[in-house]
Length: 298
Image (cartoon, rainbow, N blue to C red):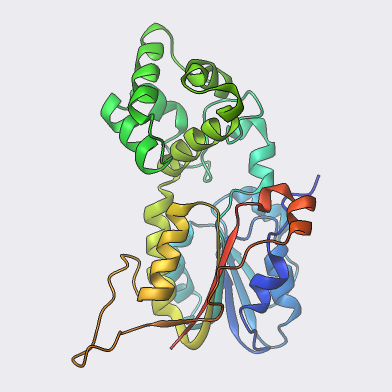
């Protein structure tokens, strides 16, 4: 089985408008699909890739102008500075969890397998899903499910987990699913489970704050004319990217100059969000919720 099938591969890489001698960054290396496509277009240019999951080291590209850095993408500015890089020509981010992570039961990302409640993208991190489920307060759990899972049943879910863990610790993905499955009807169960797991995963990996920091760093690093190409998979991520490319900041507050003209940092390359074709979704169902936004720094 492939480590991960790159989503919106040609669209996202073409969106970078690659210069053969430019400096590019793939902040979500994973299986290396996007990086391989980027490096095909480089001659004297350089490609730096980031991935906090050391499993990605198995997919490293044996190229002189490529370097993989094992750290969270929130650290791109400092790590690139160490490499002597203060400006870049383009940055690509595919914010989805890799198929590899979903398909290994021991990582605890998937609702399809029984495995330990883990969900850490960086296996050296101390916080895991087991700690959250068995130690967070009812209010904190409810907040996570409401904010990160966008679940209206957030309080019921939290109350059910608290009640269940009083009798016995919840240690596996199947234990958690069994505990909450009665809270929704069967035909909606898969979507419900996915949102619960999404919420826990985001909390474990501090994904929203990390994304905010990465987008702000990318804004600083990109040269004028540099391109940002970001694939997101849920509304929380897409909202931040959309705010940045349309309003110039992740908060979505449109700033104006003295004359009332909008102060924009980016221009959108595609006015409409780019989504996978029916054919891509057919061959790679995990691409179905992907949204690509491409912008150029002005």
